[in-house]
Picture 1 (cartoon, one colour):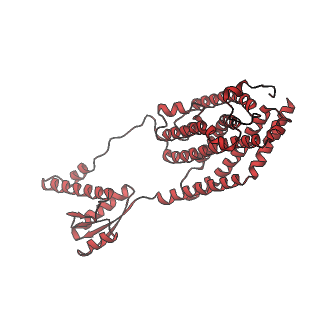
Picture 2: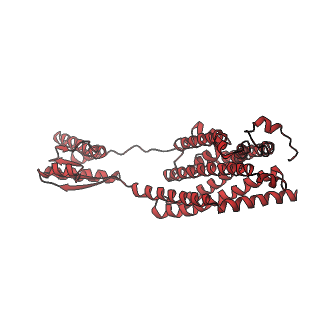
Picture 3: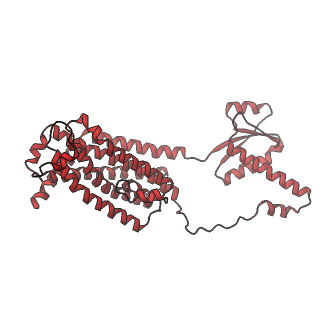
Length: 394
């Protein structure tokens, strides 16, 4: 047993070192960091409240325009007021210096398509002004008019109050899903590609003279898994401070917790998927044949990714709950729900237990198929033939 343990550790060290030195690893790491930091910075740059320029013509526009600006501030909208001469209105609209022009508080000029949010604010102020005038003409007391036009809203009590930073957590979860999808997909392909390279070059025959197929498979999974985990930690260590610096994330604890969830479910997902990718690589003998062999697994990861995006929109829905427990999709769906506070401790434990049980079942089955196919050169090996092959090497 000790020799077996030492064997797969040697294989794991070899896989880690070889891939770490590979140019593709460096390029993929740098590219991922550049894209992720770019997305974070762009999100911070473009996530600004809307701003409108409202032109004023005539003294009758000043008071309603001030009320429009105040109503805009209450909704997080900035409205800049610009007084114009009669003849300057058309020029300002055509040049873009004004989004709309209020004429004597009686009509609104726009160039073409009215800015919906600004027009809604103007119309609301105008309607309140007309109602105020009508009530004043009817002899209603001024104080009573104010009470009528500004009634106290009914109190709303939530049985399950939403988390204060739910939107922020959803944004972090979305980035986490993208990164997880890329890692599971990319490292799974790396496992399959490495198997095919060793098989095509006959290096695997030398390796199997020193270690058993089961140990070779375990070593590959362990070595590349540690490499993928290290890359994720590096990505998180760079992206999290950038997100904090530009204000995309305001609570470090929340984002750090999401990062830990991503690391945990990457390990669970990689352990499950990598053995299947290794079998897909062992069933073919050339790189040209690998794409067809990987297609079912790639589709499975893609479908899981799409389902996890749906979980972002409806994390408490039935599909999201089922996906967070199914081993194929739980590595992507469960971290999303946990980050948004929609999955409890019991669900998380159930997901982990199911993933571990599925992995414990899949790895021995994959090892048998791997053992039966890894030394067969030539035409693509059928799963039935690999299963029935001589298992003496195991």
